[in-house]
Amino acid sequence: MAQSKGAPTGAPRALSHIGIAVRSIDSTLGFWQGAMGLSLEHVEEVKSQKVRVAFLPLGEARIELLEPTSPESPVARFIEKRGEGLHHLAFEVDSAQAGLRSAKGRGIELIDSAPRAGARGCLVAFLHPKSCHGVLVEFVEEPAGKGPKGTN
Image 1 (cartoon, rainbow, N blue to C red):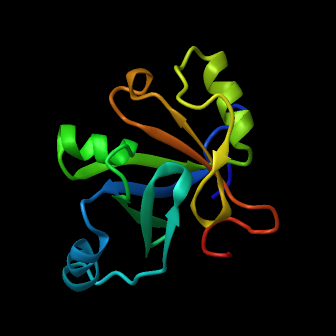
Image 2: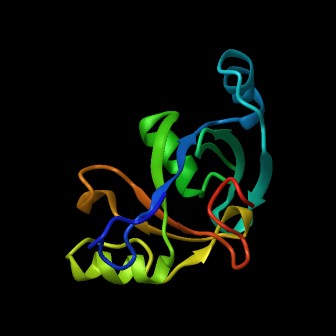
């Protein structure tokens, strides 16, 4: 998906994934694979975020299931406060750093001041839901040498 003419530097070019907080990936996969007919692409632990994640491709995007691996995990706190459910929307960007600069320049409150390592070797950065009308927004920069989703 091409970035539109006149789009600001760091602007999202496509939906990367929809993050869903779950207590257990294993118990949740039955719904997503069985009832919804999606295939499991990849599972990994992101130790720095204290989560285990599972990706299920859906068209040009993915469903990302997030399971906390520690009670101190931001996802564990989210589930404790709000229950399982929609956690964040993630958008592909050419540069997560440029996305952060652009957002900050527009007065958007940031969670991350710099991109950090995420799942699948991506760089990720988050915008605060307070500035995004209640939605946690993630910028995702694919690893060098890997193209937009579907080609890596």
